[in-house]
Amino acid sequence: MATPSEPERRPHSIEAFVRAYEGGEGLLGFESSCGFKTATWVLVCPKCGARDLQETKLADRGTIAAFSIQHVPSEEFLNEAPYAYVVVDLDGGGRVTGWIAKVARDDELKVGDRVRYVPTYKPGVQFVREAP
Ligand SMILES: [Zn+2]
Image (cartoon, rainbow, N blue to C red; front, side, top):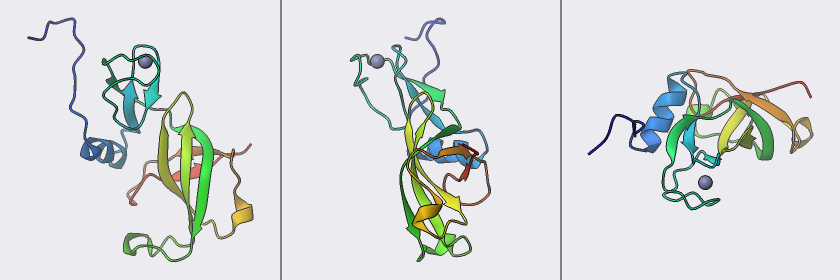
């Protein structure tokens, strides 16, 4: 039975993650008592072994860990191509995938570039580039 001092636990689901960023709430992830943060659900903290991960907001800024330019998009991105599909390491922890509009060439981005998540009606997690 839950006691009043226990934090509320919300069940994890990819739907909850999508609902949050589509609703402009931000990027949701999980945090362990040791401070480890992840965007991906894990049962046990890989850093300290704790099983107490709680839902938390992740930073909306981070750095590009990898990217790929998309010239032939899926249907929902037809109006956005070419764009960059990006893997972003968020400040403070958590790695998410997303995209950056209006990127046509490999030399327009580089690993380590600073980016910021922007809430949008468009599909997926959209990032914009920040000045270095
Ligand atoms: Zn931990």
